[in-house]
Amino acid sequence: MTTKPMNMIVIISDEHNKLMSGCYGHKLVKTPNIDSLASNGVRFTNAYCSSPICVPSRASLATGRYVNETGHWDNATPYCGEVDSWGHRLIEQGHEVTSIGKLHYRRDEDSNGFSQQLNSLHVVGGTGDLFSLVRDNFEPKISNRKKIQDAGRGETGYTRYDQSIGDDAVNFIQNKAGHNEKPWVLFVSFVTPHFPLTAPKEFYDLYNEDEISLPADYTLSERPSHPALDMYRHISGMYEDFSQEEIRRAIVAYYGLCSFMDDQVGRVIGAVKEAGLSENTRIIYTSDHGDTLGEHGLWFKSTMYDGSVSIPMIVSGPDLPKGKKENALVSMVDLFPTIIEGVGAELDAKKDSDLPGTSLFTISEGTIDPERVVFSEYHASGSVTGTFMVRYKNFKLIYYVGFRPQLFDLDADPGEFSDLAENEKYADALSTCIHKLYCICNPELIDKIVKNNQYDRIVQNGGRLKLLEGGYTIPYTPAPSKFI
Image (tube, rainbow, N blue to C red; front, side):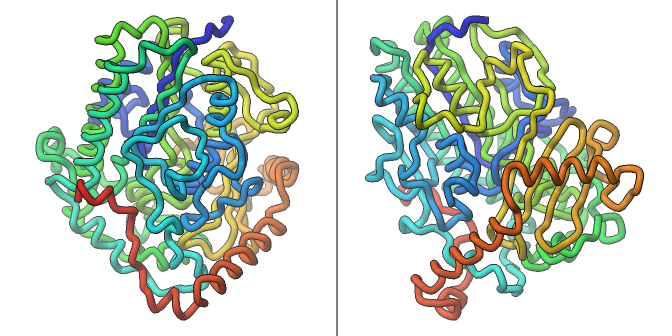
């Protein structure tokens, strides 16, 4: 396939577990619009984010680089344009690049790689969650439990905000998008299904709590025990069990939010069709990370199980194979070269020569290195140590600095129930994956650099006691004030 220059719409949601959609095989969750993108394009089954938390992941999506390259370690190191993004590259070449919705960068006034930023959401106060820098604070965040226990029907600032993002995207496509000389990029970023787990009634009521199965590997007797995971459960306030009613209500709310978000995606797709742009516009759908949703006794993001670190990735367009399922390993860093190629622009031969990503158009044609590795890392809230993930062929390594690793064969065990790291039969596979990790970075060195950097920022912001006295005040970045 020769990639013809076309307009590009990148739709990103927040915290969408890819399996919670029809096209990825879920029997209950209704996502007809995301499914339609998959039926009109390529659905990647093995896509991963660069870090299972918002700020680092979004910085990696923008720059096409790993977190350890750019230093966006946590939710208190927002992107501020200091590393070139694909948007910068496009603007340099005369393309219009517009964002609508959540960016989770530092502020609009920075050079973020957009010609214009509409209806933006950034980190609180331009600094984000400073409290989370104190990674040796082992007091459980009890407020996290209420995020599960308070799940149910209703409207929130996030659902109102997403509806407004949908409005702005439709208006942009209808009133402006067809008048550019060069292909343009529209980056539409929704906040749902990110918690709070409160779904509008019409979407919550699509599901019956009695039909909901409990998460796999959930109960105290089933869930895997690992020192780093056990500490994460403790710090996040999620160690104790919830009632079955609370669990089912939370899952239904999440399903409802997935369907609500899908409805907004449908509005964008509909606007493209109504504006007569379907034949010269491609659409990418993805998410910044997933949500474990109770599996393995874990909720939300921040771990390297697939529910958290794996993401949906769909590329749809008039010249793409219809309904193709692509099993190649791909990553969020692949979006940089994909977007550049898709609109007919060029990578910078000097600045971009060391980008780790590969265009998804190339991969969808079957041109892919069989030795390819995808990589993710985590250095943020709830983690007592640096955590690294390598996916190589059918094996997945989770490497915890200072603790024993985990190893899974995802072909034989897609649910990640059987840790093979201490099985002698898999010693060579473990060794190979660790070698692949060290070819990307030295995890012990990176962990030391991160913790020193976080310590410096703690000192700059008044010290450990001051941050702890301030308390856990940012359970999630609030929607812009007019939507609250």
